[in-house]
Image (cartoon, rainbow, N blue to C red; front, side):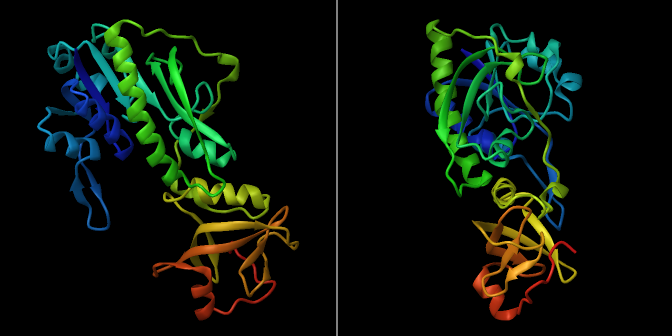
Length: 305
């Protein structure tokens, strides 16, 4: 079976690696163009492109595959397309190209958390489980019929970054099973329940700013959800503080104020949080106790300004 794989970030590498290790015929990989990365703006290939080139797989790059790639894709004579965190919407014309259909590896338990940031959304909501859904791609976002889904638990302190790694591994196992079902003729699909669908937007850098009028539990979820990017942050004495880890406590006070200067406890709209790990502007990530050795907090001092 001839497969074309569409993917861009690290999340999409493990499934591609698994398909290759299973001996699947990946005739090409489709990804986005190289992007400038870091302070020096070095032109860098996507993780999927770098992996594919290392394995000697043909790579096709498009700013918009639906505008630029149709004829190239038709020429590949593919039986199946597989998408995983590709980052572009496929047109009806593209979806009609493979002999069979297009499968998508989605990082949530559909129909919940359709959209660009399903993993962060699950953490933000305080979910205790999430998973991978293998579905048939259609024009509407993440609305296709489901082949199957598999669940994993979310730890109380687990971050989006940690969950990304686990779900990438699960996605690899799931797509291997899905392709096997397609090949042996046992693949079947179930329509999604539209009444249960929820949508999540792309995460922006500004989403990381903490609002301490939220409850302590919500603050903790935001810290976990935005780790490692864009990082939860606040402002203290005119400088940005990135907050990487907090624990929930039961302290009371005005939202955003330091209520225990010895252990960096901050009042929230309901309860309080104790900062455990942070990054001071211009410094490296550190434990809160190390930060407090060089910075004396004042009770009543307010964060967020």
